[in-house]
Image (tube, rainbow over all chains, first blue to last red; front, side, top):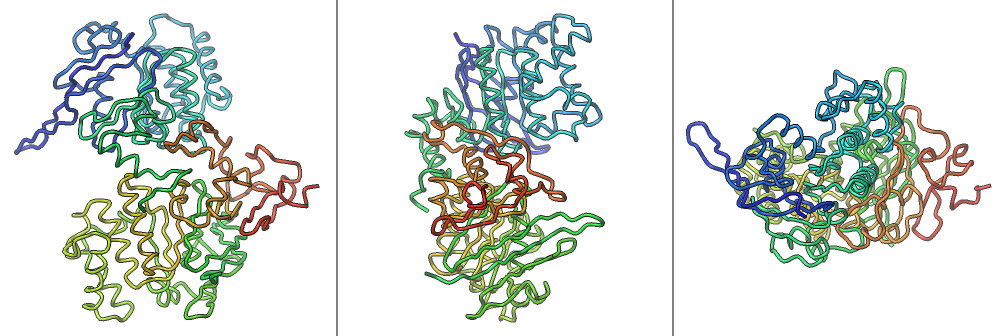
Length: 267
Length: 330
């Protein structure tokens, strides 16, 4: 069953003050994401991948097209606050910059406490604290090292883990991970990826990676969508897309990436 | 066998602060051969950039050379550049014998100074007629696939990839023997990265530059262009070997950890999976005792905490600093 259906989605931005100009950031894209599926939206800066993510998260309104999540059109069928709350809980984001996701004036667990606002069930303070501790343990953090700390006292990798711990609390059905590893050291990148894969295994979460890193996409995804100038130019399983690309742009992209086990032929 | 162009001998370069020292490069020795591309890898804060400043003798306080020397072959004889002042090295060597492409070179150009001004300045500081050098610059711009008319433009008018090419064209105008490239590709997208690597290799093929030292955290890039790879950790050399051999079989556990965290779109990577190195790099004010990697090392032994492993040659051309490969193990 499809958890998310995107149909003929477009976004046009009007920019300029005096001379208005239209920029088509996303041009008529369609795709579906199944339960437990991991897909990657790959493209360079300006390809429209982040605009797509923002529309899926219901942060910006599409110019045309439909986004149906769990059978509901997210722009037309969500009317009450209760429905919006449920949507925010089931479709969750992990962003690129873990430094920007935390308010420097509050201890880091504040982001976790805030998650409880999205839940229907009321928890007592002690119950909630236990849940927070459990979720921190799930992502490989010792609650002792985290609780009461301020954002500047912990590393980028730890911050990103806390954002994933939030996902363990809320148990969303769908996670949009926008460049989740690009700002953390290569040596801790693998840990973050493993955590997201574990979430998928244990909770059946669908995950969409938004990234420019074809290496990451190839490693984690069940399917890769390649975006270029607002359009999806290639859509297929990772082995086909990377080892046997069809579209000219994907060929150039794959051919330009430095590899570890083979030398680029034409440099 | 070619001769060495630069010899780095037991160099220790510290940042001397009020009551502390940051041991950014600590007792490092290696040679850069003629006609060689050497890649330097390591995590942020391991001393890679300090090392390139040492090579240039670009020593500005608080950075201080505490010990060791750097010898640079110029006109057939070795000059101890580390004993000269920064100004002497700048006059005699910079631009002519060695040149730097700095980290984020594309932002190193002042947006409101015309590119031709940089060339004129270079001519002036080396006593070369301006017109002659400008003519050469126009030719060199063509070589890097830039229209020579861009010389009369301002840097802000060029795209990032074009600016990077302009920087390399100007930096190599006087055919330096050694080109030091410090993270030159990290701000470029993959298509421009490849263009840049091609230019670099072409310059070496044509003999415009003799040797290149390429500093980066991206092992896959080094794999594409370098002959030898030097792995740094916390101010020390952990391993130095031909690139093919390191990729085939890393010796130092740190090198192995770095290689296993590489994520490139290749079936081999999917098969082997990726792993992480636990912990974070140490503080260089008080580095760990013994081998500096021992607190994070999966194969650490008791000796690693007590003694510091020396960088020894264990196979031809392969040097590693690790007790797993040394006699002193017991």
